[in-house]
Structure formats: C-alpha cells, structure tokens
Image (cartoon, rainbow, N blue to C red; front, side):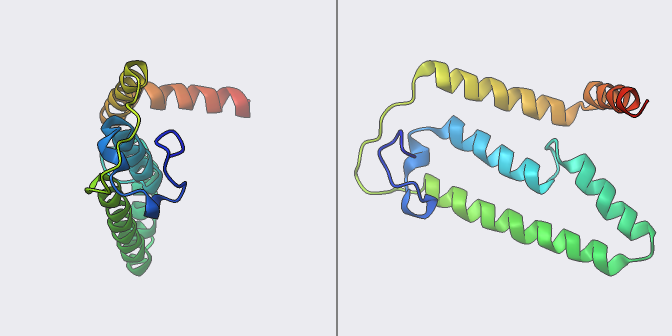
Length: 133
C-alpha cells in the first residue's frame, strides 16, 4: 500500500488491487490458506481438525468450525472486493514486471502444491521422524 502511495489501512485503499492484480491474488491465496479453505495448502490440516471433532461425536463443534470458516471467507472476500472496486481517479505506480512474474510464479507454485501435496507431505513426515528421533 505504501508503494502505491496510499494509506496503510486496507479499508482506505479502494481500487489499489486494480494496479497489482497478481499481488492481490497472492494475498487472497495467503488469506484462504491461513483459513484452511479447499484448494489451498492449509486445507488438509483444517479438514483433519474438522473430521476429528466430527468422529468424536461432537458434531456441534464441527459445525461451528465450518460456520466460522464460512464467515471468515465472507469477510476476506469483502476486503478483496474493496481492493478491486473502483476507487478515486488516482493513478497508482505500475508494478515492475519482475514483481508481477514473481507473484505469478509463487501463486502457481502454491496452487500446484495444494493440488498435489504428496511430495510435501512425505518430506514433512521424514523431517518429523528425523527430529523426533
């Protein structure tokens, strides 16, 4: 936001995402991954928690987790919509090509890793076995 010459508060940054859509896409993916939504890296741990509570006959806690996930996704989408909607007629600085390429590469890598997590999961399993002895 500072790079665009805007205030640091996201609420005051209407239209900033139009100048850097790949950066906003990467931010969105990071938000959704932290929340544990499907098709992100964080989904597997979130789903394990939800199913574990569901198997322990605590269906209310599972339903509460899913409801919290839904509300959180809604709030993130509201923030992202504010970043992408038309703002004042201020021109922002153009994002350099190398930054756009880096954001696209990271986004593609993260989505690929979320869709095919087996190499990462086997590496984590080996790493945890080595650490625990």
